[in-house]
Image 1 (cartoon, rainbow, N blue to C red):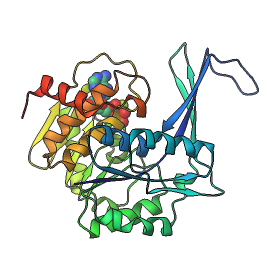
Image 2: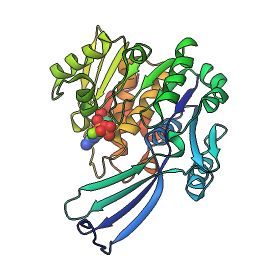
Image 3: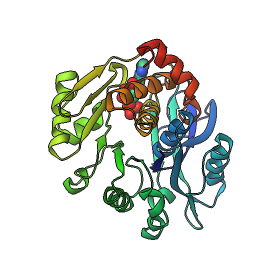
Length: 309
Ligand SMILES: Nc1ncnc2c1ncn2[C@@H]1O[C@H](COP(=O)(O)OP(=O)(O)O)[C@@H](O)[C@H]1O
Ligand SMILES: [Mg+2]
């Protein structure tokens, strides 16, 4: 059993200030933090902490920001054999401005190294991908590399889980190779045209994905919980009541916990519960990767919420 997560690494550079600067203006902010981010990386960390055997594939520049990734994965005890590096490229960054008064944010993401994954890079990972039980993907790397990886995995019979975030159009021939899609409600709306506000909407959006050849559909609904449909059975799980302090990275936590459970051989609806538990725990803490819960915490909340299997 193993998961290969092929995705993005981005350093989050977060400044907090009172209000935003207007064009031409310089303001003094209140605090600055930086740390590992990117949906691919966050989901790999979540699955690893949840107890899965995960190999994360991404590409970094040979720069100080890339070192942040390597240091973090080594500290976590994660496999770094497939963290590619390329001289002359920059590790991707996200400049995040948070207005402490309105709690709004404004973000500029610069995808460089992890958006320049070449055909040769993908070939280096062919055997790894072919030997995976689950391939976990998002939408933050270059699409040509993404499609090559999907093709390799599909031919090898590897189960493909795509978290289509941020939402981007997916060609029909690619969609037909995906086993499970896991959009949130806004991504589901962009991809299907259906505004998802309740279980009936989620069902209609899920049917759209199934019509395109996807085998199973999960739609995460933020504070409304999470939904799954396999063409026969459907379930809307309410959110687990926790005290939410920071919901960024909830979807990444969900996907990591969900993938761990699938990899361990659990069915779609049990994996949905693990995702719901992992997402809930992540919102009780600040940050993304550092906020991912451990297997022990997941098992405790799972048992308290759903009982023991
Ligand atoms: N306020 C919350 N309380 C409990 N669980 C939450 C909360 N917000 C999110 N979650 C959990 O995290 C999952 C993913 O959150 P969601 O907002 O749908 O993803 P994204 O971060 O991609 O927008 C939800 O399906 C739910 O399981
Ligand atoms: Mg959300």
